[in-house]
Structures are given as C-alpha cells and as structure tokens.
Image (cartoon, rainbow, N blue to C red):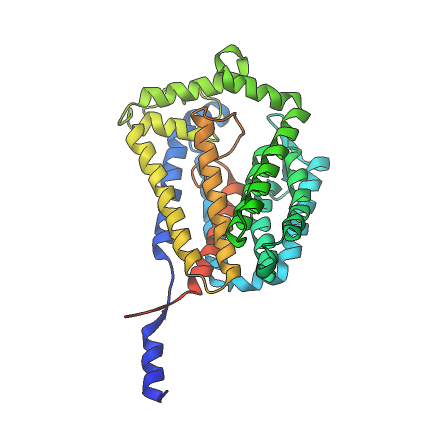
Length: 372
C-alpha cells in the first residue's frame, strides 16, 4: 500500500463518540430536576422549611455525577480490566459493613455514613458487578458454552447477591438480572439462560419466604385496599388515573400533597402521570427506549468483547430498573422499592448511574467508523 493510500485510509476512519446518548442523558437529568422540584417542594417545605431542599441535594449529586461521567468517559475503558477484583471486593466489603454500622431509614439498613458523605454501597455493587463479569466473560469467551462456566459465574456472583439481598432485595434482583443478561449474550446455548432465569426466580422466592414482611407484600399487591401498607400503592394509582391523557399541568398534582408518601422517591412516575398525563408518561418511556437503543448501537460496534459486555451490562441495568419501577407504580408487581433512573431522588444512585454512562461513552470513543 502506497503512502497516499495509507493517508487516504486514515482520513476515511474517524473516532466515534455518541453525542446523542450524552444529550439524552442530560435531558433526562434536567427533566428529573424539574419533576423532582414539582414533586418534592411540598414535603421539603413541611419537613425542612425549604421547598428546594430535595432539589438542592439532587443538584449537588447531579453535578458530582456529571464530573465523574466526564472523567470516566475520557479514560480508556480497558484500564478497568486491571481493577475488576478490587471493584468486586470493595463493593462486597462496603455492603458487609452496612450490616454492622449502617444507618437505618424507613426500616431498612442500606446507608453507610462515613462522616463526610453518606451513600448506598448497593448502588456501587451494580457498577462493580458489570466490570467484574465483563472482565471474566471476556477472558473465556469460548468456554461460555460449557455448563461449568455458568456454575463458575453463579458462584462468583451469588455472594454479592446474597449480602445485598439481606437488606435490599430489589437491588439483588437487578444484580442477578445483569448477570443473566451477560450470560445470555455471551453464550450460544439458551439452556444456560433458562437455568440462570430459573435461579433468579428460585432465589427471589426463597428470600421472600425467609421474611414475613416480604411475603406480606404479595398479599398487599393482590389486595392493596385491605391493608394499611397498601395506602401508597392506592394513592399512586389514583394519581395515575386522575392525570388523564394530558395531565393536570406541571405542578398541578394533588396526590403529592402528602397523599403519596415520599413521592419524590420510588413513586415519582405516578406524579409524572398525574401532572403530564399519559402523553408525558409515554414520552418519558420513549426517552429511556432511545437510551437503550443507543446502548445497542454502541455494543454492536464496540472495539472488543469486553467493551460490548460493559455496555450490555449497563443496558440490562437501566432496562430492568425502569421496567421494575414502572411495574411497581402501576401495581403490576409487588412493591420492591426501586427508583426511576435519573429522575427519582437519590444522590448515590445518580452518581453511580452517571459513572456508568461514562463507561459506556468511553466504549463509544473506542469505535472507529469508516466513511464511505
């Protein structure tokens, strides 16, 4: 090949960066802040004498998360292959620490207070498990068709799942879902996927039966009107039903005025339905669909298997969490306490979600496209 031909080839190949994904994520963050203020201003005024209390906290977390996303996006994603064990052990250790010195809130011990910061290690565990499994699977792609490889992955994942499920079953289900998705895309045998799916169901059933309050959630789900704890579910359904096609208008919700407890958290989608109606709810869902579509494009064009698996893990995480949150709000499944990504109130969640987006964007930077 002549010098002119090599130069021409270099000109035809250019580095790809998914700006469309970045724009959509920023839009979701801004939309989340607007809805958070609309949803939480009443609670903030009543509890803290500051209508913008929740907004200020979330804005700080968003800014920190954006900085983390930009930094991670600029780092070559392959460098994290060197820290897979550290990520897993650190997340596992912090989750164990929560059981002993964690801060309890609303009957659940999920927060770790380090003095200068308070956060949920279970959110860190989601990101750690993506890096951990992507590294392991990328190192043995030809062995993924063997049943022994499936057992190996399950043995490695279950300790993390078990320790997280002790206080946070919903996050444990998401972690298992990420593992199932990565096994599915990396294995040519569907039987392994079926086995992993069966393991998820069995694991969930066992943990539900181990605690009476989890079994009670099933009864509340079936007949919420008969139980005092079904109040939140019913009020959320009232909010959805009263929104109609185009809603009552931004800020016009009545259910957020103390009827839906902690509306800015897991039930924020019900307030979106009330204020923006079915049209607004569908638009929010479409935004998440676009995010997942961009993930698929990046994963399909990733430079290597490791990058594709990282993006697939992030795709599974976002998809599972969105589906479960909306299913809970609409009472399609029992209440599991899962937040809506980028929109629900929660500093730890948004920081690690944006860090995860940074990983996906880093993979997109490694893509080389050829111009026609």
